[in-house]
Amino acid sequence: MRTQTALRLRGRVDLVVGGSAWWSIPAWRPRWLTRRMEEDSARTAAGVAAAMARVVGSPVVHAAPLGSPRVPAPVEPADLPRLAPQRCGDL
Figure: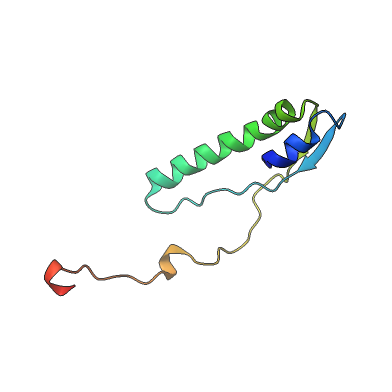
């Protein structure tokens, strides 16, 4: 949420109409970490319209795309260079 924008709108609007394209976290390794990050992100996304309404003091209509767009990530984990483990003496 853009907090400063919400504060400027407080008491000045009857209705906020907006939207976003919230991102998701890919299920990359370590999976336990990316799963937790995705759960946190989804929880934040689900509550942002209500939080904006509380700050602005008016109802919020929030639109968002539905579904899974197919776009390539700029760098996939398999594309990252592998670093060979080093011993302290090799540094």
